[in-house]
Image (cartoon, rainbow, N blue to C red; front, side, top):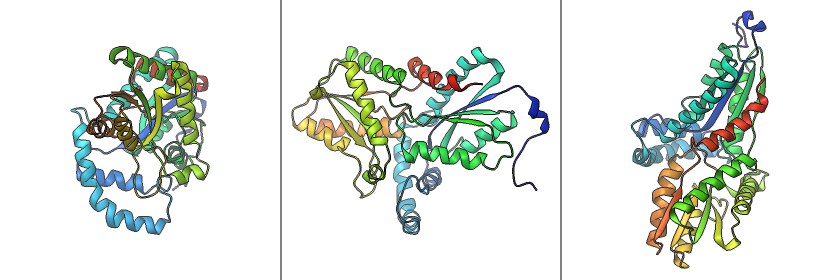
Length: 338
């Protein structure tokens, strides 16, 4: 049996075909303890996600975390689950359908589009296999994380190249590392915030909440913190906000290590205690609403703000499948179609 996977030589003379792969982090197959255990095992076993000595971490993961956390996480997922399934996957499929329609109308059958998750299903490996079987010789990978981070974009790179390194014929591959400062992305965020303010009024404080990461990653050279700050600065400048109109925070910390600060939950509590009655919160790092937005931001952090004395709390939804967001994706994809 050959060490490398290949297709029939009949594809050698085929017309150039591009495969576009949209990726996101992942989701369990269902909101059950068993499904969460499988998902968390894969996710938390990735050294891109947890960088402590391997043997020590595996003992903690299998001896403690996978015995306790799946049940708790399942309840949280159950609270946001829809009839169609996981919100992240549902929205990702909607994004894929719109991107596919736009590209098919322009390029016909010479482009195929798929969606995959770094952890869980549908998998990156299966999507790439479909590209290979369909004679794709140009692959565009668009991880839908605007701000590069090792545990997200970097982990996606690992999955893609761990798969194709076993192929006999390696196609051309374009991998989008980041788009945190792309004009159309900034414009889409500005339009979303502007529409919200027009509908609900200007808040006492606009909160930019980004997914957190251990401070150690920043100290070791991960650009996520800096890219997040640049996104915020560009949006704030476009909106014409003063420095007292907004605050930038980081959410979703895990474990005992110090993470990027300031923390979203602590900041919201402090804002309410300082007399801010109305906040609006947006999370630019999320391209699709998921557990961290629909549960953590919509409910958990709202409760913290209200209990500390706040009165009005609004979550500004992720860009999801808004037309302006699809335009961002097309702008990133089309220059690399051959």
